[in-house]
Amino acid sequence: MSIETLGEAWRAGWRLDMRCTQGPTNSMKRIRECHYRHPLDMVTLVCTRGEAFPLSLLASRLRCPECGSRRVAVLFQPPGNSRQAAAGRIT
Image (cartoon, rainbow, N blue to C red):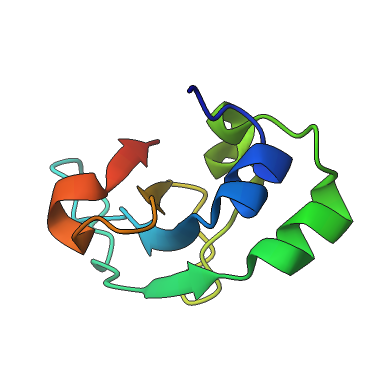
């Protein structure tokens, strides 16, 4: 079974984490590396985005609250799997 929307992930019991991927750059301007990571509330996401919202677009709608960067990754955690083995990444 393929999970493609927020509603499907919510009903299947998935958990989501957001992680900032902002790191130092090699250009003239140096950017401070951010290590922010936080679990996302599935009920709030479903209420604000809707059950039909595609999981593939979720990272593009988020912003890091620490540094303001839009470079974030969403980690998907299906129920019953270990965090490390099950975490899928979409940036």
